[in-house]
Length: 358
Ligand code: IPM
Ligand code: MG
Image 1 (cartoon, helix red, strand yellow):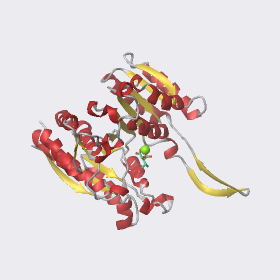
Image 2: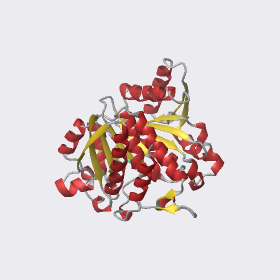
Image 3: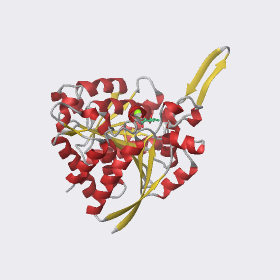
Image 4: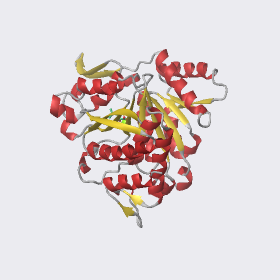
């Protein structure tokens, strides 16, 4: 029996309910592959602002550094929308990514066969969609120097600067090529090299590096075109690699074509071995505490934790298959409910998935 230590950061809104559900599933899956977990709960986001006066207390960062993996619910909410920018709840996530060196964000966009009718796109366009978006996560305009609004020559202005260095681009495109080798060997690198200098450098570096990956086919696409292609012909994509800002936008777009952003997990990884796992949806404060939130995005994030931080593929695929089965059996939380289906609460969804683990 091996012991693994997991830091859980429920965050705000529905964060508590969905991480509780995911922990139950993770514990059950761990039993089957001889892992014993210890869980430690830490604060971040609005909850941390209320308790400590800052969105990301040092204790939280330190605890994460010692863990085998971090499971995060979601942060933010209207209660903390009017605080100073450096105190915003979102800063917690950005700070954690930076402090833990999590430069790569994996967002698998996979359609569940039971839910193709939930997609806003025609079923024939989305059936079998299986895209992996790899988003650069600790560079670019998110982390470049900023100047909040100020007056210059009588005119108000503000600045955000996009900076990318060669090593930042090299490591993320290499990761994309390595991931592609385990899939269908195709990578689409998305940029705006017709306008941005950082993107021209990105494209040149990707072209240089792909030479070392003869089996991989690299194509380049402008971000605006990619946004359009994702709804026109999503099946053309396999691995998409892109910058922090474009990855943020395109991954929401890609996610929603699966029918609900409540279903999708993400993993943020670096070279240090530690990973942060979170659903891609937000904290949904409007439905907090009502037991109707969809826990599947968080449960599947737990599966990714098994895969990428614990090297336990068996538990990862066991969870993924159980989710697939439960959906095929017609169990639905409110966000994905349809006529003739069985409506279940957050908690019931987790227990169905646990029952389905085999
Ligand atoms: C995401 C979120 C975050 C981001 C926010 C909450 C800071 O939208 O993880 O996609 O922009 O990266
Ligand atoms: Mg986002």
